[in-house]
Image 1 (cartoon, rainbow, N blue to C red):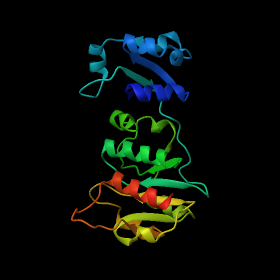
Image 2 (spheres, rainbow, N blue to C red):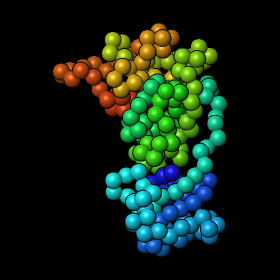
Image 3 (cartoon, helix red, strand yellow):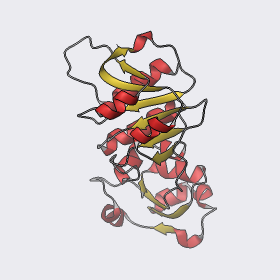
Length: 221
């Protein structure tokens, strides 16, 4: 279930397999061209009271869409690509932001460990702001991924080498760990490189999504 004006528009514009749209009268009237490809019984006019019952949000939006989950993809990245690999990310908002970061930097694929938060959690979908339609997502063990790939990998840690010393990359796996614990020792040990964003102030750590944004900005530009 995807909630919100922007993301429902993005899903329809991208030709995603939308099974149903539930929206207020004014929203439906404003987006008749987007809805023209859907069967008539897939478009349901509802009032705000019904949307509030359907919504997982405190303040519901004007539109919601129901879709089948995309089919599974091959989790092993191809040579010449950069992917983001996430281990045990737990917060839906963080996951959604990480998907947006991947979309912003042109990363086509994210690999999530099985203990990550559900990528299709409604809060995650909403926080992607539509990026979920452009980034392919696979579920796979990160340790197994590193054991099977020949791509270089970059593990975000507190005790790695200064990221400023690394050149921009054209292929590789950027590893981001759990919000509180970071990457597991097993995954860190398998990584080709251990990288650190130098700390200048007194903060104990960075938010996982913030760290990913800084790392992508440094390694991909």
